[in-house]
Image (cartoon, rainbow over all chains, first blue to last red; front, top):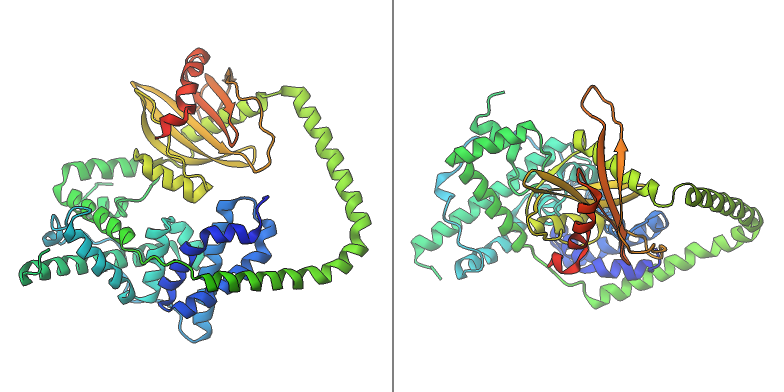
Length: 183
Length: 270
């Protein structure tokens, strides 16, 4: 690859910094994490053939550095969790359906604002999986490879996080509708 | 297995995900089309997924972080390079000799390949990949061009929506491996005719071949528990500055030659 390492990672920097903030919920820790992952990626760079591979490598190293740091501090974000759902539920909460406002409307923007804050309320491990599966749009198998979890656990965590956000959004919409705070 | 709501939701969740198109998925999709509860479940899941993506907290990396990172990398580069200077001085004669031998081998092989078949190995590789895909490869189902563009951006580093070609509908997208290079494949259908469009990014600095369309018929004799049959496949290949393109399908080469500019035209991607 003709481009220099610094030039290439510069083009992903905002995405990776956003990911690091989402994982750590702290700007200072996010910067440290990104710096450490970048130096690790620098040593792997000679083996990278394409730009897309470098982005994937950087993301994988960001995740692995994050997990190592948290585990060294005695907190494993992906510790076995007995509260996980084994499978996708067979019921759909009917009261949620049809309440979602249309994309781009003022109500949707209010919901977006709420959802932006909701990320920080998720379990650390679920937040990590949600980012990888929904923002990076990695398949469950790839998330499993990156995190060391089993594919079924990735799927269960992903489902739990989506469901929590969906239910929270429905509650928020209900609260706004009944509280007279409609935009 | 009987497809009930629970089973269908398990198979089809996440609703916005690309999935392997097998008989189970077909059954689950058929169930969801008939079942309002499952349709609503999947529709809500798609909306939640959209909300998640739209609500992502985005931040710009501060300039100080970029500067600090550049400094740290420069330090790392210097630290990494210093011990190597001595090592390089000791090792360069055998290394250069090795490179010369390897270069000679590559040159001889390249010359042999060029003499042997011209473009034929490339066309055959596309035909083989097409046949392999027909019976066994993973198929990712979506007709959403933007979703395919995101998929290619993530997997291949090229944000290229599949071309819009009159009368042809996008059916599936997947990743292929042609002669060691990863690329994207989009399958199209039109009135019972199927054609696969391959787009293979070239490595930076690769020598670009002439851009004219080379169409030829490949007679592939394929065996495999009676599943594959001998067939005449048409393969058209061409190059632009950044990609190798190919169209593969059960069509006469004259038809592929007619279609190639429609798939290759940049305006068809808008």
